[in-house]
Length: 109
Image (cartoon, rainbow, N blue to C red; front, top):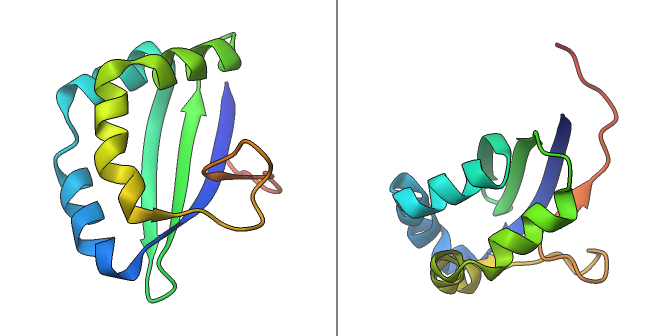
């Protein structure tokens, strides 16, 4: 299992919309996350900075393939069409990233 942490901005005028979307995540998206071996997915919001911190555990054996499956899914692309306009990716993210991945430096079971 891999623990994944990531950070992303949310546009100030879209915070309420982003919260509404995630208060009722579509069942197809939840099922897709499970199929792609993602568990314990949580997104935290820090206001007034409007930073989103995402955490999940990956339980699969081919992360790249599972992420490609997720990105190619038509329902997920539709979901992203609502979420992406709310988001403000960090300028310092790595090339090819939307959410900026974070390095784990501590964990306690």
